[in-house]
Length: 273
Ligand code: URA
Figure (cartoon, rainbow, N blue to C red):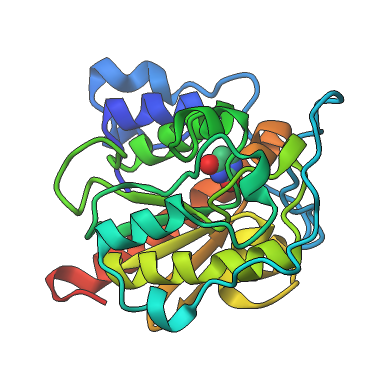
């Protein structure tokens, strides 16, 4: 791939140094070809750790963990909803105990027919406050990663404006890991979002997104680097941005994964998936 100066700047922001053949660089950009003292290493074995949420703050009140005796989410009904009805169903959801501790639900953001759909894990504190996914530190890294591919969450055409959603629509208290039952109860909403967007590629970020979509407990390191399918839609697995903030050495791998996703879209051409 060839990179514009803006994309190079974004990659530097991500901590990734892109090497270009000298002939590929305009004179004004030549300084960019000088290696930085600390380029991101690329060699990590298949047992690389998977994303885990940040350590919980100590004084957070814990919500009751049980989801027993709560109304279930009716998959068949959810599967018929349009965007406004789905948004309302999520906003009113009381299917698990997370509804007791959330400030608000975090539905999703972006183009309703985006070519790219990013699926994360669960809202954190900032997302719970703002009602939008990935607005904290991990979100800033995600935005930089997207910008390096000329993608954005801001309004734009469907090939540029992505759609971002989480596997869970409510914040687990203290940013603890989602519980299996919470994931199961929330899943129909994500399934419907993917059906409505009909993206050309899904990028699943982190262990819980991957578990929910691919139904596997395999580590990210074993699943990344190839194209999976979710309900007929190509799906690429990568590390969660929060994990990358803790393990910047793996940013280069995440970049490779995004480039693989871009190739999938390029191969589809105008025809779609
Ligand atoms: N991590 C996620 O997976 N999603 C968010 O919205 C924020 C952090």
